[in-house]
Amino acid sequence: MSRHDRNDKKTPFEDEWGHDPSVQSMRRIFFYMEEAQRGLLNHLNISLFDKRLRRSREKALELFEQAWSRAVRKGMVTSEKDAGLFYTHCLARALSSDGIEVPKDLLPGGEKTIRFLQEGLS
Image 1 (cartoon, rainbow, N blue to C red):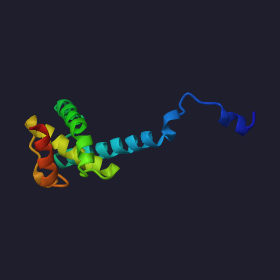
Image 2 (image 1 turned 45 degrees about the vertical axis):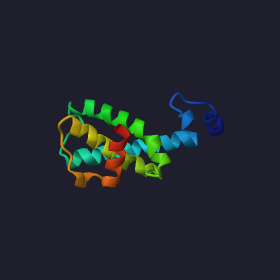
Image 3 (image 1 turned 180 degrees about the horizontal axis):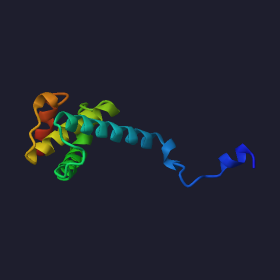
Image 4 (image 1 turned 135 degrees about the horizontal axis):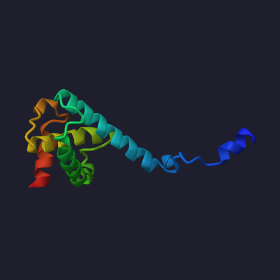
């Protein structure tokens, strides 16, 4: 069997969706969100495996999903990297609601993003 023949056969691990630009974009967005989460939790000295985080992560994702499209429309999110910054605020808000205080100086983008999230939940 030639090298060419082997490449024509699909392996069970081949990622058929990986070539789709929208899928690639979403994967990068999730990467930036995870990176932002790790950074924030590291600054707070909280393990990624802390049991308190499950509820906070669920809340943060729900808030992110509610606010994301509005943030894009308002021009607050202009790149995939902004997703991580925006998610940091959502996670910080969720952590705070679960009793884990997050200093504002750890939040990128500052008051504008905080006000935006507060307005959206009013």
